Image (cartoon, rainbow, N blue to C red):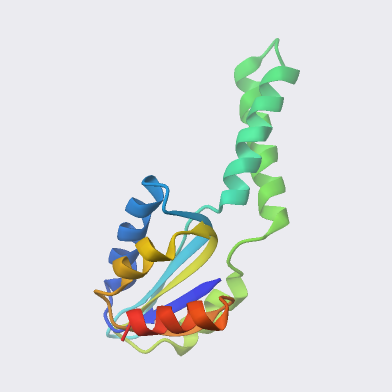
Length: 155
């Protein structure tokens, strides 16, 4: 888990776009992500992205639904996907909505925050992608050496 507060409103969204590009290159894999942006007037916006758990469960559910309901394959796939998404959400291994709300309340107007639950990553690719932004590490489950490297990248 990494939660980073950025000094500017658009930085979390821009940083996430860069990290998604690294994801397409195979340099990082996410379990879940969320972005919080607080307008200068104090209004907060939260964008929770679908988690890897939900995506996987949805795909498995669609496959099972399609196989089981061969008479009505489209209905079976839709039902299976819905059940899979429900199961994936029930597992709730991603970013906690309550934690996102806590950070949202403490985020100063004009700032943004990025929540990342990372499955795997290549630090040599990820850290340079974050160096162009200035921010603070709010919380992380990284080991102390990796956390320090992240803090230095954001200075």
